Amino acid sequence: MAVETIEKNRTVDVIIPVYKPDSVFETLLERLGKQNYPIRRIIIMNTEQSFWKEDIYETVPNLEVHHVTKNEFDHGGTRNQGASYSEADIMVFMTDDAIPADRELIGALVKGLSQKGPSGEYVAAAYARQLPNRDCAPAEKYTRSFNYPAESYVKTKGDLEELGIKTFFASNVCCAYDRKLFLEAGGFTNQTIFNEDMIYAGNAVLYRGQAIAYVAEARVIHSHNYGCSAQLKRNFDLAVSQTDHPEVFDGIRSESEGIRLVKKTCKWLVEQKKPWLIPGVIVKSGFKYLGYLMGKRYRKLPRWVIMKITMNREYWGKVSG
Image (cartoon, rainbow, N blue to C red):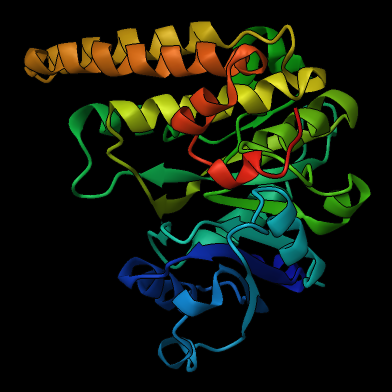
């Protein structure tokens, strides 16, 4: 995708929360350095300074590193802190395990952010397509294609009836934000267990009359082979975030989207002549749904149960009740 000259006038900072950086993170930095669209600064929000190896990254150009402790880290608050160091027109948030698939990632996101909705809505956020890693399990590979199809689109409030909760779907695995609109909105929710991207997107669509763009041409390699326990914990935290933000998620169709994914995954496995994988999909989906139901009712659970089934134990030390 060619990047128009006028678009290159918009400056870009990339903001990455990092925890225990590894070789995948090194590849991420290397590929960011080869992007065709210029990156002004790469702002790192590193959790625990002892894990950061200065000598490995000292040659990376335009790299700026800030350290927080594990207890200080927050999905929304730490990203807001990173945003406070940016003066760029556009901020691209990434996770430390998302690898650009090519040199056009940043340019495609900038172009996606410059779109408008059908009624002239400004795009507040534009998120990238996630491609599976080589070791990705077959069912998870299909999930990637379900959530991140090959066609781009722009979502607005008018899509709620058809798309339900997917209207708000966005992912800070790789997502670009218009900094001016971001600051006007007050950034992400400062204290959140998870899902800060969808909370922001939901508020943008529902209350600020803005749009969310999915940019299929912007591609990162990112997937996980979560087991049943991890899926339960992840969906528990997801449901906690939705329960804590009824202003966004109340009355929005959600469970039906999960059921549709399970049915389509099973159908795909039959087409791929791998029907023996279907029981595993159903069992794992059961764990997802159990975690979701428990998260929706987390206020009725004893503290010790919550601490067993959350992925973000530090978060609960910051909240009362």
